[in-house]
Image 1: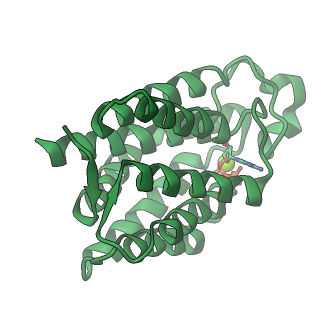
Image 2: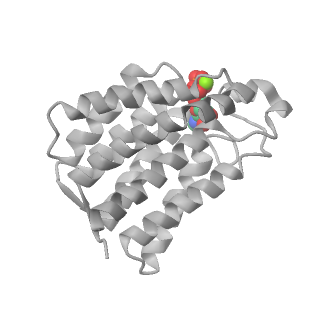
Length: 215
Ligand code: ADP
Ligand code: MG
């Protein structure tokens, strides 16, 4: 039964996320070539490679230090819309976590929600706009309700990852109302949103990092 997550497990999360975006780089590029400018795979791979380099040189002890480093590196190394959005997510998440080395389930949920709020403040996405928000908001909701029902953190994070994937898949028929894809209007329908796809990796790797810390 997992009930907390520490800096080392979150460090592992970030490393796993870097591996996932590197492995799925071509797919993210393919998705972005259909409704964007074909750079989401490159943006995420470049950003996460810079993040890994940053956090491997002197492992941060506190969660805010770790996540703020991730956020600042993404903001400065990714040119596309996703850099400032994911950067803000990690900066806000770190600030909400604070100078601690362990978070309980409620603390982790509050930090993830603060990250989501940061994306909303920055990009003004609403549900159904066909963005990363459409994967992230259901994931945070699912985490919250699984914990409220008494699930342990590992199980609740797995539910959050499933909700992210369902949210990503639900972007398929949507007409984009934010970002570059919105320029296509009706022609954006029939394609998955690239940012919703990368957000799903974010929750899948968080679930697997928590599971691995438990085992
Ligand atoms: P760019 O669009 O500048 O080429 P990327 O291709 O890296 O940047 O990222 C595109 C993704 O960013 C989209 O698939 C979408 O999920 C997300 N996105 C774009 N604009 C917004 C916004 N205003 N709010 C939330 N997410 C957004
Ligand atoms: Mg793009």
